[in-house]
Amino acid sequence: MHHHEVRDVMTADPVTVTSATSLKYVADLLVRQKIGAVPVLSLRGRVLGVVAETDLLRKEELQRDPDGGHSVHLSYRARRDLATAETAGEIMSTDPVTVRPGATVAEAARLMDRHGVTCLPVTDESGKLLGVVCPRNLLQIFLRSDDEIRAEIRKDILVGYLGTNEALVQVEVTDGVVRLAGELERKSMVALIRPAVRAVDGVIDVEGELSFAYDDTEPLPAPKRDESRRPAERGRTLGT
Image (tube, rainbow, N blue to C red):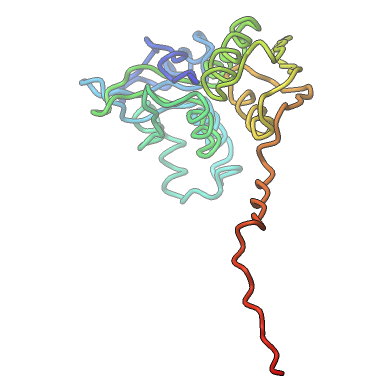
């Protein structure tokens, strides 16, 4: 089963800034490009950090409220540096969370959720920027057509994964919701098919009931003992 990878959905030619870029220009860039963050690159194209719109908002907050507001967890020096920052290099999040182009869309989504970020620079092994991925990119998998999803379920799940006869199962897809009907060859397949279909990119939900022709989950009965082959019991002779 094929899962869409980050390279399939990322923005391959993202806007970037350097550490010397002014914050006024960064803010203008975020607004004009309608993006939530921008990578900060070295002269060799390696990712040094990321400036997010939340970083700029935090700076604005500290200029108005030097005691911290929502940034009270920062040290006094950190709050002062943030409030007086003028360039991207002074405000960027260093050591940013990055992702490889071969990671799946699900893996990228988990990274965003775990680290609370909305922009993942996509880098190669050397740290060079290849693109960026944001929540809007990841949502592209939900735009797959119903026909695409149906074809993948029939080919990759029914035939490739379960090895069953696809003609026995009806697959209907409407706005990403899959409805299954029909009969599978073995009962064990019933437990496998639903999670497999849910894992298909673009599937919203799975409905329907499936029957089965053969219950392969019950233990086989023990073979009957052949009474004709039992050794004759040795009889006792009573004394006279």
